[in-house]
Image (cartoon, rainbow, N blue to C red; front, top):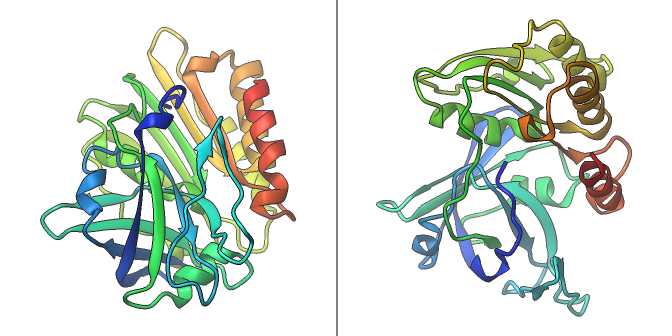
Length: 275
């Protein structure tokens, strides 16, 4: 995945408003945003991370903290927004729209709760690199694996891959009702898996261990994003047991069982950087 060093000067932040929302599946929600600043994000790479800023209840504008030395400076608590990492899912300049997808898992998370209760005209702050970056490297064979949190990125990669790209994608969701259409012109084979009442953090690893992975004679690249322990296990398998290089694997966890994003952020970041 593209590295973000020395790009702070390219960060764009803007306040957009909700135009409408659509449930893609029973627990997957797309928020359509609009506003005069949408064209400022025209060059941003679809599939890259962005930051969303949810204003506190009763606050009529989004107050952005300053981003310095890799951190967001604190604001007074009464105006401080809730900050979360999401994915730039798409932009339509003709319609003046931007799209962000949310896993709708109830009110137990501030971003999910905001998305589920969002109404037309509600404000959301967005911060993102306003320049083109490399979402994935050129390769002959791709391994894409993730849970519902990774669907926006995996979808963006699949939609962008060339016709001659080969590989396999594994996506883990709760049940068959959570399957959503993903378009690709590539030869990557997409597989959906369901955890139901099972321990979901071992399913992706088990499926990947069943794949006849290519040797290093092919240019290969793996993108993995899911729960912390699942990502760590898959990364260890690819790097230590199958001898994939650091450049061949991008693996990052968006969440960790039993902890909030703030509680797990430092541990997830340190584990990612230590590999």
